[in-house]
Length: 627
Image (cartoon, one colour):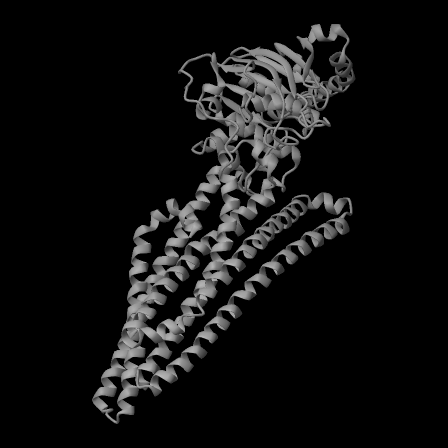
């Protein structure tokens, strides 16, 4: 009953279905009284030697029509009740999915994907079972039980009914004790399944690393351990579950024995007839079903209640980032001002893969006291409309964290910190208004199942084929796509694993360019590209998108030569800052790394120039030949 009260908001959505089902159940329960009563009359007629063909056929016809009516009504309540359960489950699944998509990355730092999938499958299945089977058995056991008892009292004997029901209060006491154990063990079983689910997900997702490093035995041992824990937990659940049926049957059997003894004495005293006693025993037999259902629904509701508590714990968690209400005015300049006095990941260890590169490890809490080390401290700069700011520095400097804060994937958590867009604090903006101005290319791009064209057009679903082809060309991937058998209609596997890392990165870049946002946030978008392809893409960006504001995070410093401002981050702090020439003059980290990369960059430039010269000569020769 506790679970029904908690789920009342969802169950109200199906009030009509439930009412129809309950009405049909009550009608079935009433009709179910007819056959035993008619059989009792037939027995009495036989005992009194008064049975006639007409009486027999009339009573048999009554039994037959009652059976037909119950058959039809059982179909009605089954379809209505289980239809309601499916609808309730659908709404809860939708709400859970929307809740997942609304949560901040910190939420996914606390929960593994396997655990969340277990909540979305096993726990929701248990809740759906409670909303369908549980409600059905509860209502059926109550309606049928009380209706049968009503017939036993008023159609046969109240005294015999009271004696027959003497053992049944024990049923409530015992099933309640079993329920406490069921809730405890089922919760442990669900948790164990979450761990098993995550172990499988992790192994499958990293199957290439598992095979290449030869750690199959290790993964098998870990899986076997989780499997044994899950098996043990489910065996504990089965042990408690197996107690319900035998206990109910024992109590029912005791009631039947008492009924036979007391009923036989009443017949000897002429208190009831043999026919009435026959009807009573048939009614008592009908009680077995409701009492078995009573025990079973107790089991189902305990499972559902345990799962609902697990789901409630997820629903109770709120996003760290709250959407504002302000909207950027049309025509407002897309300038960004960043002033982060201090930012640290405090609620979880590590950063989510969303918005944080694999090389940015500054988010990890390494202090022994449990206080998080700041990922960023005293970082301030401005990107004017059409400006170009570069971010670089050693691994773990906080570069990707900075982009995540601009996109509001995390809250600043410091009243002295502020990020503004078009002069408006981003915390006051709606998500649509903020992210409509931003186009993001992560270092580790995420592609979705579907065609290449669908992935590129994800931010602009109604883009034309020409628009998709153009941004693909700007990202330096068009020719490779067209060389595929299905071209832009080629289907991608999960996360685009049938493409190379560089191809995935350029498709993600094309997706961002198609959105045509005012500000490009590029988190090391060339890390998987060879330097020749990188130079072509960089030139396309400069030529066709140079008017847009750009924040570029990169370890390849030649990409920052033309930046209006360059920040070198180390351990979350700005250790060097200025334009290219000024930083070179400082002879610091930037100058040292740049000089190491410069020679390779010069060689690449010479190679590209030579290739272009060869192409031009070939074109001239071809034209001359045609002439």
